[in-house]
Amino acid sequence: MISPVQSISIRLIILLASLNALVAAAIDMYLPAYPAIGADLQISAGQVQQTLTVFLVGLAVGQGVYGPMLDRYGRRRPLLVGVLLFVLGSALAALTQSFELLLLARFIQALGAAAGSVTPRAIIADTCDVDTAARAFSMLMQVMMIAPITAPLIGSATLLFGPWQLIFWVLAIAGVIAGLASWRMLPETLPPEKRLPISVRNILRNYFKLLAHPRFMLFTLASSFTVGALFTYINNSPFVFIQQYQLSPNQYSLIFAACASAMILTGQINLRLLRLYKPLQVLYMGLAGLIGASGTLGFLVMLELADVWSYAVILGLGLSMLGMITGNLTAVTMGYARQFAGIASSLMGMLQFLLAGLFGTLVNLTPTSLLTLPVAMTGFGLAAFILCYLASRAPLRG
Image (cartoon, rainbow, N blue to C red; front, side):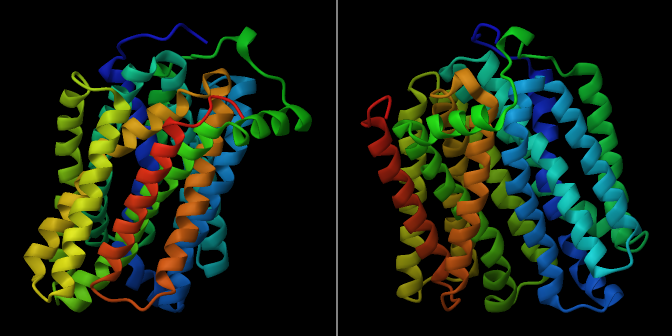
C-alpha cells in the first residue's frame, strides 16, 4: 500500500467514477425498455422487474467475491476481469430471445459491474487519508451521478433506432471503452508485498475481524440505510409521479434527472464544507437535512397540502443531501479498515445491497401511498443518524 496522500488526480477520479457508473447505467438505461421487453419475450411486468432483482443479487454476490481477489491479486487484474464479465453479460443479454437466458445474462453482467463498484473504494483507501478520501469520494459521486441523469434518456433515444436489445449493445460498448481506459490508465495501488494469500481460513478470519469491529460495522449499517433511502426513492417515485400525480413518463424523467442534478450541486457544497469541517461533521449535516426535508414532506402530505411541484421540490431537497452523506460516510467507514481495504470494500458493498434490498422489500410490503416515500426516507435517515452517533462513540476494536 502506498503512503496516504492529500490529493488525487482528476483523471483518476473520472476513471474510477466511470467504472462505478457501469452499475447505474446497467440499471437505469434499460428502464424505458420494460414494456418492449415484456411484449417481445411475452412475459408479465413482474417478470420484467425480476431482471432488475437478479441484477441486484448479482451485485451483492460480486461484492463478496472481489474483496479477497483485490487483496490477493492487486487492484488491476480483478477489475479488468470484472469489466470483461460485464461486456460478456451485456452481449449475452443483447443476443437472448428467452426470459431465462436474460436473467442469466443480467446476473453475469452484475457480477462484472460489481468490480467497478468495489475497486474504486479500495484504490481510494489505498492512496488517501480520511480527509482526502472524503473529498475524493464526493468528487467521484458527482461524476458518477451523470449516469442516472443521462442513462434513461440514452435508453429512450436508443429505442428510436432499434429494438430493446440495442441498449445492451450500447452497454457492452461502454464496457469495452471502460476496460481499455482501465488497461491504459488505472494504477496498481497494492504492491506485491502487501497482498494477502487466498485461503478460506484467511478470508473468513479477515471478514470476522471486520464484523467484530464496532465502528466499521455501525458505519456500514448506517450506509445501508442511506442506500435503502435511495432504493426506496427509485422503486416508489414512478408510482408517486406517474400514477398519483398523473405526469407523463417524460415529465417523470425530467424530475428524476433534476434530483440527480441536485445531488451533484450538493456535492460541490460538500467539497467546500470539507475545507472547514471534518467529514463526520458534514455527514451529520447531510443526515439532518435528509431527515428534515423528508419529515417536512410527510407532514405536508398528511395535511393534504402537497401538490406535485412542492412534493418534487422537497423530495429533491432531501435526496440532494446524499451528496453530503455518501462520500463522507464511505470515507469514514473505510478509514477503519485500511489494512485490508479490498475485503472491507467488498463487505461494505455486499451489506449495503443486501440490507438496502431487504429494507426496500419491507417498504414495498406496506400499502403504497404518497406517505410511503417520505415516511420511509425519514425513518432511514433517523436510523443512519443514530448508528453514526453510536459508531463515533464505540470502541475502536471489538
